Amino acid sequence: MEFLPRPELWSLDPRALHLNHGSYGAVPRRTQHVAGGLRSEMESNPMAWFRGLPERLAASRRRLAEYLGADPDGFALVPNASAGVTVALSAVPIAPGERIVLTDHAYGAVRYAAERAGTLRGAEVVTVPVPLEADDDELLAAVADALDDRTAVVVIDQISSATARVFPVDRVARLCRDADVPVIVDGAHAPGLIDQPIVDGADFWTGNFHKWPCAPRGTAGLFVAERWRDRTKPLITSWAEYDELPARFDQQGTGDYVPWLAAPTSLEVLEALDWPRRRSWLTTMLTEASTIVAKALGTSLPDVTTPAPTMRLVELPASVAVTSESERAALAAQASERIGAELAITAFGGRLFVRLSAHAYNSFRDYELLAERLPTLLREG
Image 1 (cartoon, rainbow, N blue to C red):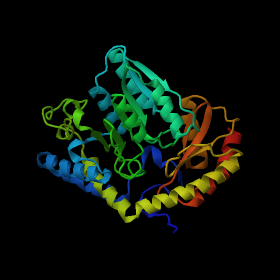
Image 2: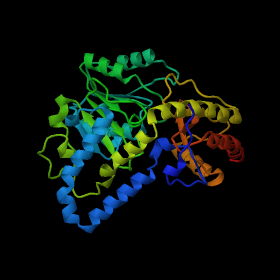
Image 3: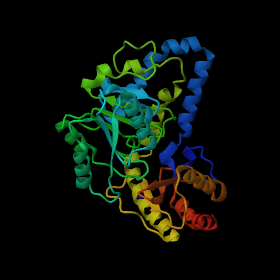
Image 4: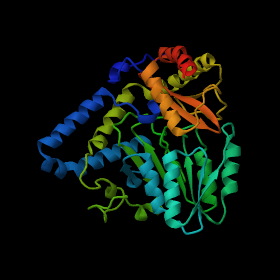
């Protein structure tokens, strides 16, 4: 079955090729309308708004937990997955001389969070190298080799950002449980790409709703296993300090909580789009489209053992002399300004990639146009 693109459901600029949904998502018009109405309600009577907010936040939180298949008693709302990982690291006891283990696929902000935790507590951050083409058994063996009696916690991707790979997190969680080592799952990309992504046996799981479920930005979830709930607290201390989880996360001071209230509307939009089947179709379409882009560049699709749904890596030519993060950002900005393409430029293992995404507003023609335009941009520099 072929699905027609539905760009009219979004307010995206039709002059641009929007090929990087994975970074910041895109909020449907309907959700924008609901959020606008909520914000108008808030501004019409702030006192009444904040009096009624706790009950509305709890209802929205329960709906988002249901979407993930999460126990609502252990599911809290946070601004983003980076915040979720930081909260989890603050809850885990880490003693001087112990180790925080992650892989070389870890998201940059998550790595920084681990480094901060290590600096504050006198712990060492250990990076486990996992080649892009490593299979799940090899990945598991690499993590196992890093575990010892000094390991305080393991932080593992569910879907890696730079390499768009699905990790065998269920197996990693079992490995860590057998070793009595807490595990934090960074599921930033998992909601909307993996059905019921909460990992059985994980101590903490966090994921974004602003990416694939298209919720307003600033909406993410943190699931906490029962044994950690008493000691898991928000990074901001506020009036709910002595409430139980998850209520203690609902209001961290005065803020704009409209995104959390509007997020369930985006889930309704996805449901109307027959998202699970559409996602499968988009994944097949993107694989074919990515091959066309790679052919135009004279490169290939890298061997990613378990590529994520609706994301694909295309290797850029070796002649593209881009090494630093700032240079990658500059190349993405050039693609936007000169060829009208919004792209994610990533790097791993000394290789440079464009990470392509596909959502319901994308068409095959989007990627054909990229294949026509990108080689010229790279040649001209």
